[in-house]
Length: 257
Image 1 (cartoon, rainbow, N blue to C red):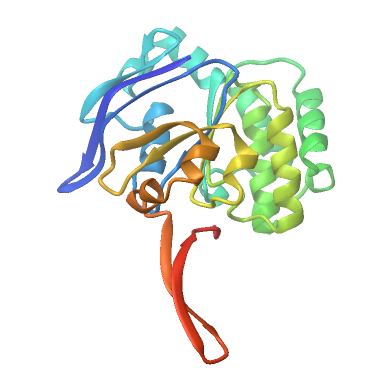
Image 2 (cartoon, rainbow, N blue to C red):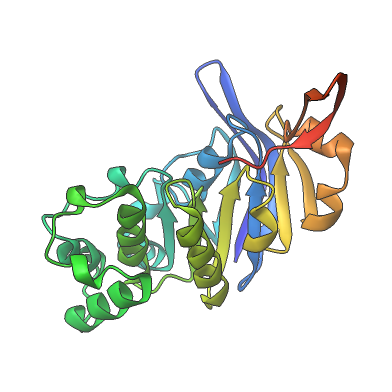
């Protein structure tokens, strides 16, 4: 579905990605790991056709994808329906006067039918039916995230890119999200640096190192057991522990959002 070849990107003097290559097959649920600043969000924006990489190529079902290529009518319409990106901060995605209008916006833009049914269906599945008449800005962070997710799914994409989707969610809502995503019959690529959550979001993991290269691509469990790779990705740390009069140091993984 997605093929990435030799992808590199930088903003000014700041390198974000360096010679990244991988394939993502239809139906896969993969997790993109890396510490803050490793390039995860930039990679998702490139895959969504929002940013043109400085080097390398992204193909979606055989079609080259950049903002320039997506200016063409037929490809743009198909790509924007089939590929969706959920930003970490839902506030950047919500701009309509009501939750109903937010969920209806995408289907209206691409000319889909049965708008009322689509809105009702996805609002119910994510649990925001009670908010349909409310302005999105009046909702909590977790509620906004659910509205943004429903708005993307209302166009029935084939590939969903999610940037730290649990960041604004409490533990109960995080559990709901894990089950919800597992049941979606679409391809998923989800970023996180929370290693306790990562195995729940996919069985394959792509890991970006601090030097912005692809450090690992494979099953998640072997990676979680490899201290050297965890350290290279800045996903493990060491600090002091005190037990009575004793003090010692050992490695821990990052389990926070």
